[in-house]
Image (cartoon, rainbow, N blue to C red; front, side, top):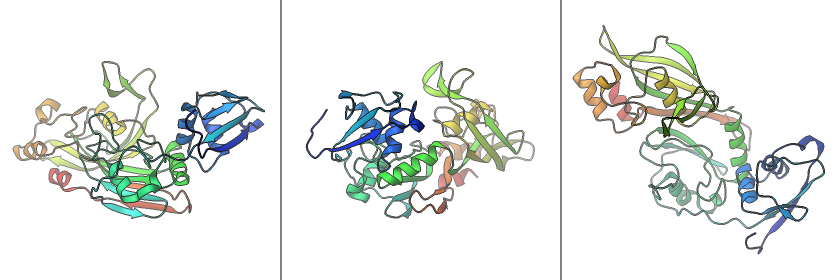
Length: 325
């Protein structure tokens, strides 16, 4: 266990209702002021004991009558440093902040992108309030968008807000909708795409709809506009709503039905001929000028984690996607 200076001790006894639950879930329910992600990190780091012995497995099943002791150290400052990066702030209060992320901005530091991320910008903007919330490397982050996906993101500014938002993401009770420009025109104007998503067995760096394993994923879509000549449609503007939230879900699902997102470097293609589509030179030029996948998170709505009020925000399509339309 690490430095014991300024350590707060918390105790929790397993009652019948929690017998058989995961340890991290039980402790998160027992200590409502601390998010499950922080509790999990404390367990892994050796800050949780029972009967004098450390417990470092967050998935360990608890038994009735067990008493767990959590040594809660003072919050450490987040590892990333604040950097002055302009943010398009859509909404902000003392508990959360909603920003309209531009394409090209990485959400949190990672190998290859150690700084100049959204996290660095949030630390500079929000100050010390983010420290320790959601983990040192990703303070305040509840969900993410891919680097080259633009649109609305919400971040928590305190542990209670992080916990409340994380619960809504976990039970898929938020409203999240995206707009994408895809190659071709789906056969039906509305529909749903259902298929488990897991690692591509042929390329572990990619996700795919898999027949075995993976996680259940469901995407609802609606065609808003078709693009092309009177005889052939080259592309479509599609609205997608997530019933689940899996890695690359929209990109993988649309590819699985033969309509990959234009500009997607992993699942799609920039050249229409490679997708079997034949387009005008003007449209192909617009595609060539698009330096990312044509995917935009245009809507987010949820119950405010503190007040309980329903809030919802929309973001217009950015100029580079509008150029395709």
